[in-house]
Length: 430
Image (cartoon, rainbow, N blue to C red; front, top):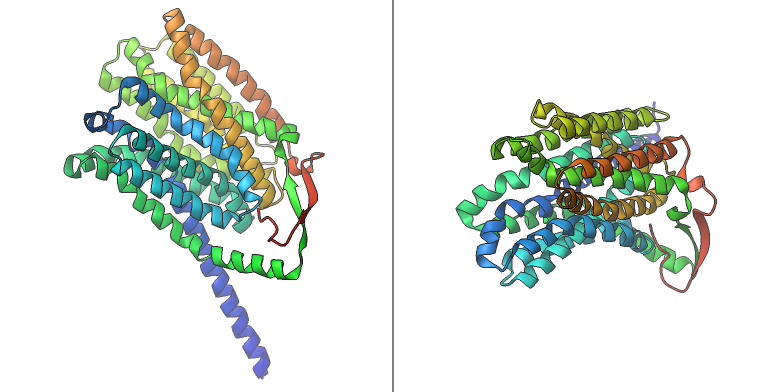
């Protein structure tokens, strides 16, 4: 016969397991909702530039600036967010990132003039850039044994969050106006805050307990720029993004120049971007089961090269095939995201590496569309552009080889250091 104390302990254990299970559901939902919001500010505006220009001063050159803002601000946020992680938890940063995104989207929806519209866009994009950085350490912290699965799910949600806003933009604008079409996405950012409010207060309570315990605290500082593998990961992420954004910008122009109609040229872009959805599901799961996932890099390289050769040499024939092959090339994008966690040992290191890789990578990606256009204008054709992209693929091959080797970035000399935090405040939480 069971003792009363034993039965009580079993009941407590059952309640604890239930609480942990509910906590995992909440955090998983929080991660996925945040992921869905991370491109809404990017893709909800381009279909509405004509309507926005009718109310605000938005010349062609300013539309070009808007096109460069996402990668530029994602890059800046990537470099700044790890510094904030030294002081704030990833849960707190998730709340702040989504709050900034919601505020920015509301400001630009209500903006009476161009300056406020640009400022609101910048705030929204900076918040989403911070969200990009905190997702990998969140996965590492809450789902260390499900890294491949959770990465596959959140990258897929990013893809959906990229695809759905432009589909809804014009119908909503026709019914309610462009301001509603742009601004209502702020509600999704607000919803994304809610799961993390259930976690963030407990982190604050822990910090208060530590403040009471001592006034001198050790902390761990991660400096990923001291690791060759972290630089390689940055290049893998950046070169993939550079090629992807270049084709986003110029694939319709390449197809139109080959004689395709405007509709068919747009279809090529849809083929190129659409194939990314199954890749985002498959690649992280595969990489999580492989000791060295370099074969995925090789697959992406072969697809990029075949697609580029077809678009360069015979763009008017079987264009759909070249677009499809080029669209398989960015298999290295979800790979680079899952490698952030597979090549780090703690969520602290994951956060620092995530910010460094995405910061450097997105700033590098800014160069692609601009340089591709300049080369085309200077030469009158696409040969120089494809030559430039071919050189970047050679860099991608080397970077992939370095980072795919089975070793941890935070094991490299000088990357992780323990230092003392002086003063009466709480130690940094990252």
